[in-house]
Image (cartoon, rainbow, N blue to C red; front, top):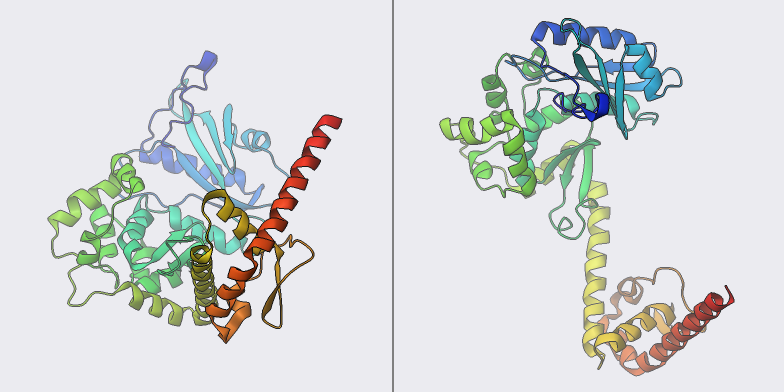
Length: 385
């Protein structure tokens, strides 16, 4: 939080004095905090900060694998904090400044996502990767978003274009949460990454040398609200977008650029995800065909408004199938209705549309009676109370 968590945490709601730290104080506090946290957590790390920083607002520490029971209070006691604020898995602590009297250092401790799960160790390494080098992963994310690639707290994913407009989360196919595998796929220099960066210039060149990075894709990206917020709040991100890319017109110039479909194919092949993709697309295509069938059903019903809604609900709740043939059930279905398009198979839509035309009045009447009885039962229960 850049040292701003304790702006109202002093006596009577006054701000604590949390001055920015010179590099030597930052390094000393980082090392001391990790030493104090090691008896409590199996994994502790300070994600690598951006190069060329002249000072630091806080110390961010990622932890995981609890070795003992803990609370924010016990952590605060272990590191000598005088104040703390907790918000979900993130905890802000104010410890006395080692050099400035009546001042504090803000220490932010975050519990790694997925802690306590079988994937905890991998997720810890991935989260450290995501948080290292300031805005690096945000730059990578925005630069590759148009190609269907997404990095989140669970790993690197590829988004299936046909599914994304209806369900962005379901459109994502997990690829990896191992930093080396992600960098290899993106065509980024792993050796240089692990060696570290001396300047922002090195970071920007490193990103733009990835195999998918292309100026044409970058220039044609769709800017979102979050992107504009990053430009205002994230200095390194802003310098890359507004300064470095315009000042380096050769960056990302390619003889040929990757398309989104080509990146998808490359991802499915590299990470052996073609089977998962086929299942996802089969489900999607079935859903689309089923939606198209219900659109035609709505069109053949001579109804509109609430009456149309009642008839459609009746069809979904009172129609069952036997050997692919529809019939009006004696019992109202309470589970999700079956996929009609899957049941009718090769018979096509025309026979089922003809059946609907002949039987919609019956199922609409059944659903109307059910709704009326349900309302009367609810009214009676209310009066009894």
